[in-house]
Image (tube, rainbow, N blue to C red; front, side, top):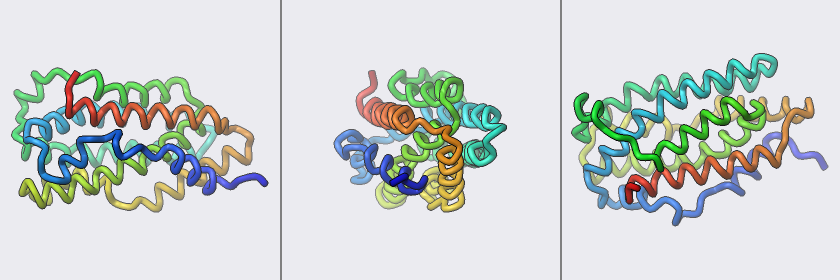
Length: 220
């Protein structure tokens, strides 16, 4: 029997759920055992990730002109990155990051592999395949952000303003989820979705995200 988009998204999200051992940093933050320099590095790396992902999602939206639901999904993602940018500044400031430190920071290759691959998808992936891969990946990111937001308040004394970056991504996004489902369903109906290829994209995204967190803990 043919699966619906909702069933497909649920299956691939479950298949790509990261092994808890693949991210040693978030549990450390959750216990209040990560040092401030590591939190500062997280903020500094995100300074590169957020604008890069925003541009990549804009490009995917432009490439989806003939697939309006996919275009709407990527536009919403880009708008989310725009909302996140000022919130990131408050987190960075709470970590002791000022403009001079941000300007002289050398990004870590292991952290920037994720946005580099998002950019690769923006240039090379069929939009419908990218929707499926990105939507499956974001469920893990939202969970990490919820854990970090709670820990920053409990163990580090961060204000609501300083935690707002993580609160934003931790919030349920039913409208975004619905748009992703509609985009995948439209692609299924039109025969424009390559499930195996999308699964491969999602696997790489999850691997690069795990690399991001491991690199922050043990820079290479």
